[in-house]
Length: 396
Image 1 (cartoon, rainbow, N blue to C red):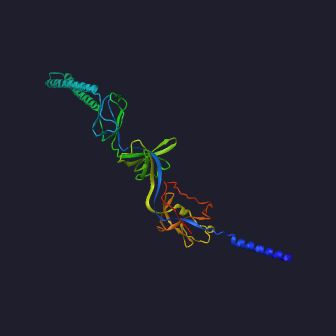
Image 2 (tube, one colour):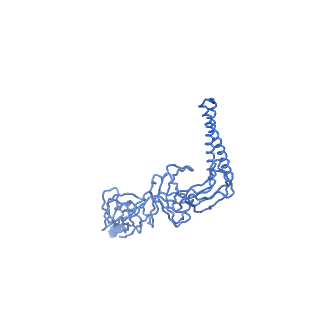
Image 3 (tube, rainbow, N blue to C red):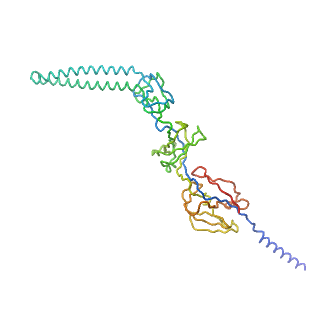
């Protein structure tokens, strides 16, 4: 009797254990998932660099003659017109050289007049046989030498007058004086190179940025690409420009090779000043209003083990996105275009407004791939600034 009771109790215990394993061993997982809408986005890749702002056209004004600066008529920021006198050198010695050249020319002209008359006289006598050929040729030689002396002194006078003209410094362009390198009374020497007296910028409303782009990025930079940049002087302002030239010569410094990229920029309010450092973003890939999906949607793939009793309806395709409706995960093969690392352009396979799954969460918000609690994260692009897309959360 006791044995039967023990056996029955053991059997009942085994049955209860099996029931517990059968009905309590499986914990029902509640599924939650994030979706994003297929919509139009601006997709862009960019290259960053630093550069220097400078005028499109600037001229260093110098002097070709040496002397003492007698008068200066302009200062920093002076607005000047082409041909306007901006400075003068002392002209005393230069005027003396002009006077000496004139005197030498007058003397040469007098000699020329005498030698010409003498030659004509000897020519007449020679034709009559009254002078020898040697005397005639000597008169002819003296006449020709007098001609050469006149030409030489005319050139000397012209040179002296030109040097005198160089003592008056005029602006070669319409513009603004950026710098003044001399003071009145200062001596400038033009013996070996032309000294710079002023720097004049033609138009400060049209500026350019000379940006140094790293050799790893220069292959993507093309003329006509959109540019935005900031300067420390106005940290809250963003300026725009366009790539106008990609220079072929590389510059090497500390084993780093960079290439100069010229960027045009409007400066109507004159905020951009020559010499400012610009933090440049060049948009090497720039498409506005293209149909796109988040890159997370392309990486998502549901697995039967973690979606509970939901159904998976797969399809063939190199790139897929998934939708969830009526407890069914359905794949859609799509054609893709460009990507900025956050969003990818959709060329076909799914329509605008469709909600695609980006990730699934189970067990109170544990991500199915890692099993770790999901935190609010924002995906960052390796190519571009922060993307505009936002995920929308649903629960099933």
